[in-house]
Structures are given as C-alpha cells and as structure tokens.
Image 1 (cartoon, rainbow, N blue to C red):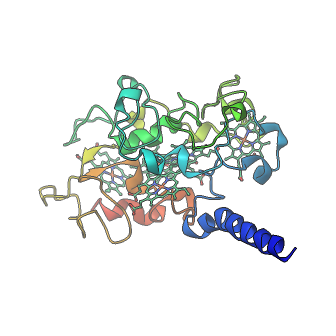
Image 2: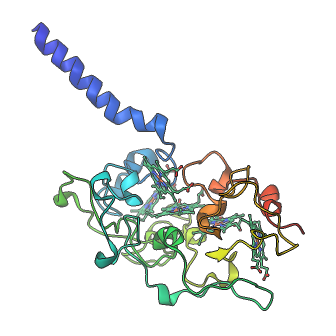
Image 3: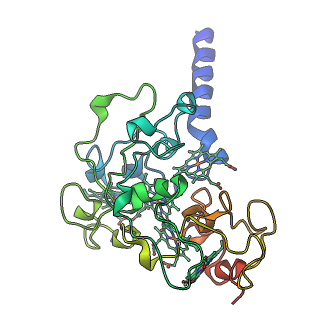
Amino acid sequence: MQKRLIQGCLLFAVFANLWYSPVHSDPILGSKHDFTGLNTRAGVEAMSGLAFSDYGSSCIYCHLPDDKKDENTSEAGGVPGWNRLTPATDSYELYDSLMLDNKVRTPSPISLLCLSCHDGTMAVDMTIFQPNGWNSSEDAALHMAINESNDLTSCGKCHDGRAAHNIAVKQIGTELANDHPISIEYAGLNHKDPDFWPTESPNGFDNGVKLYDGKIECATCHNVHDPDVALLLRADTDRLCETCHIK
Ligand code: HEC
Ligand code: HEC
Ligand code: HEC
Ligand code: HEC
Ligand code: HEC
C-alpha cells in the first residue's frame, strides 16, 4: 500500500514536472503561439479535433524535435533548421524602392518560418515531424491556415469577427512590398549609411532588437518568446524604429 502511494507520488512528480516545468522555462505556453490545449483555453469545444492537430508540445510547431536537429530537411521541402515546410517562395513580392540600398528576392529561413504560417497559404499544423508517440489517429479533421477566407481550409471560417475574433490582420500575405523590408543587410553595419545607427553588439542592439547574419528578419522586431510586449515586439513601437533609423 505504502509502496503504491510512493509510486503514485513519483508518478505525480514526473507528470507535474512534464506539465509545469515548460511554463516557467518558456513563456510560449499560453501565448498566441501555443497551439496546445487551445480549445480549453479559449473555451471552445468547437475547435477540438477540427481546426488543427494538437501535437501536445508548443515547440514542435516551429522547432525541430531534439532527435531530428541535425537532419537535412531540405529534401522533404523543409525550411532549413525549422520544423516547417517551405512556402512557395517565388510568390513573394518583397519590399523594393528606388531609395533602397540593399535588395533581396527571397526571405531567409528564419523569416520563412514565420511566413509559413503568416502568409496564409499553408496550414498552421503543417510540420515536417510530429512528436514521438503522437498518434496519427488524433490528426485533425481539417488543416486550416491563417487566412480570412470563409472556407474549410481557413481559420477565417470561424475567425471572421463574428463567431470568433477576426484573423485577417495576422495574415501578412505573400505581397510583402507594403511591409518593412526583410532579409536585407542592415545598412548601419559598416557605418556607411549616415541614416542608420551603428550596432551596439555583434547581434544588434542592447534593447533586444536583433540582427541575423547582419540581416533584418521578422524576428529582428518580434520575439515570439516574449509575449510581455504588445504584438510580441522587441521594443515599444515608438522606440522600435529609432533603434535603427536616425531620422
Ligand atoms: C512560433 C515559433 C516558435 C515557437 C512555437 C517556439 N519557438 Fe523557440 N524560437 C523561435 C525563434 C524564431 C527563435 C530564434 C529567436 C532569437 O534568435 O531570438 C527561437 C529560439 C529558441 C531558443 C534559442 C534561444 C536563443 O537564445 O537562441 C530556444 C532554446 C527555444 N527557442 C526553445 C523553445 C521552446 C522550448 C519552445 C516550446 C516551449 C519554443 N522554443 C517554441 C520560434 C519559436
Ligand atoms: C505555426 C504557425 C505560426 C508560426 C510558425 C508563426 N506564427 Fe505568429 N501567429 C500564429 C497564430 C495562429 C497567431 C494568432 C492569430 C490570432 O490570434 O488571430 C499568431 C500571432 C502572431 C502575432 C500577433 C501577436 C498578438 O499578440 O496579437 C505576431 C506579431 C506574430 N504571430 C509574429 C510571428 C513571427 C515573427 C513569427 C516567426 C518568428 C511567427 N509569428 C511564426 C501562427 C504562427
Ligand atoms: C469552429 C470555429 C473555430 C475554428 C475553425 C478556429 N477557431 Fe480559433 N477560436 C474560436 C473561438 C470561438 C475562440 C474564442 C473567442 C475568440 O478568441 O475570438 C477562438 C480562439 C482562438 C484563439 C485565442 C486563444 C486565446 O487563448 O486567446 C486563437 C489563437 C485561435 N482561436 C486560433 C485559431 C487558429 C490559428 C485557427 C485555424 C488553424 C482557428 N483558431 C480555428 C473558434 C474557432
Ligand atoms: C522593422 C520591424 C518589423 C519587422 C521587420 C516585422 N515586423 Fe511585424 N510588426 C511590426 C510592428 C511595429 C507592428 C505593429 C504595427 C503594425 O501593425 O504595423 C507589427 C505587426 C505584426 C503583426 C500583427 C498585426 C496585428 O495588428 O495584429 C504580425 C502578425 C506581424 N507583425 C508579423 C510579422 C512577420 C511575419 C514579419 C516578417 C515577414 C514581420 N512582422 C516583420 C514591426 C516589424
Ligand atoms: C533593425 C533595424 C531597423 C528597425 C528596428 C527599423 N528599420 Fe526601417 N529600415 C531599416 C533598414 C536597414 C532599411 C533599408 C535601408 C536600405 O537598405 O536602403 C529600412 C527601411 C525602411 C523603410 C523604407 C525606406 C526606403 O529606403 O525605401 C521604411 C519606410 C522604414 N524602414 C520604416 C521603419 C519603421 C516605421 C520602423 C519601426 C516600426 C522601422 N523602420 C524599424 C532598418 C530598421
């Protein structure tokens, strides 16, 4: 009896650890990018087994599982380094202007990660790997994308501003010409451009605004791991722009 109790306690401890430790170590849980237990959190049974597959781990929707970290996923059509299929990159129209010094045609992998959900073309649960032990019989009935369309492959089916909050504003689309330029070399790096501040550290700026291989990416301005600032921004909107732009 006592042995059983102890076993029970141990089991509980293991479970408690499994369930609760990520909450403290990673703030993704409970944020907009946590696609586990979304139904219960949002209080809607309607999404259960319908809108997207609940893989039970919030990390897996972006990160490769630990045992697959070194795998070359390009052959599977993956975004290098991430657990996402690559969206059709030839459809992107990136920011361009006569004034722009640094031009690119294709977003870098770390921005493709974001676009694989936010361009609205691919389902949110379209990962390359599922977690070990995940049962494919739990696969969602429908695989929906961040798209405002009123159809069975779009979250917009419910997220139309009536049945649920409107999702249209989260759909960046593939025409990125109206958005801030991304995947460009930061113009302030070599102190060559007088309109931009030099960087304060090898990776960017002391307030957290971060460059990736010297480039501006979605994650330069947004930190999906820090839901404390509105819209996951790395700095408040008024200070964000002047981190780099001098005028
Ligand atoms: C929406 C996509 C997304 C989800 C979900 C996500 N991450 Fe991340 N993660 C990122 C991005 C993007 C970076 C790179 C951020 C950076 O350079 O600051 C990152 C970086 C990291 C890093 C490296 C930190 C560093 O300083 O370089 C760790 C560790 C990490 N994530 C763990 C996790 C864990 C654990 C989970 C699940 C609880 C998780 N992530 C969920 C996108 C995600
Ligand atoms: C697996 C799909 C997925 C990936 C990958 C992803 N997002 Fe999201 N993101 C979402 C969803 C879903 C929402 C919430 C939509 C809603 O609530 O209407 C969201 C919300 C957001 C928001 C708004 C947050 C708020 O508080 O309203 C921002 C900003 C954002 N994402 C940026 C990013 C960035 C930057 C990346 C890449 C580092 C990224 N996302 C990667 C699915 C994704
Ligand atoms: C069957 C209808 C339905 C579908 C389909 C659906 N949702 Fe929802 N969702 C809801 C309702 C209802 C709520 C709660 C009210 C609200 O937040 O607007 C909700 C809430 C949410 C929330 C907020 C959770 C929170 O804790 O704040 C997110 C994020 C979300 N849904 C994402 C999605 C994404 C991404 C898709 C598509 C992959 C999707 N939903 C598909 C009905 C649906
Ligand atoms: C130069 C900084 C910067 C870059 C780079 C950037 N964003 Fe943003 N993003 C912002 C700011 C500021 C806002 C809020 C104001 C606005 O809507 O324009 C925002 C808003 C958003 C929102 C939320 C829209 C809403 O109102 O709820 C999403 C989603 C988002 N960005 C995703 C992305 C993705 C994906 C990328 C890369 C393709 C990206 N961002 C690149 C600064 C940036
Ligand atoms: C990480 C540094 C950084 C941040 C933060 C940043 N920018 Fe930029 N921005 C740049 C760079 C670099 C360019 C492109 C300069 C070039 O190569 O000509 C640029 C270009 C632009 C352009 C296009 C100008 C042109 O030459 O056509 C606009 C508009 C702009 N930024 C507005 C903003 C706003 C608004 C914000 C705040 C929401 C912001 N930026 C935040 C670095 C940044």
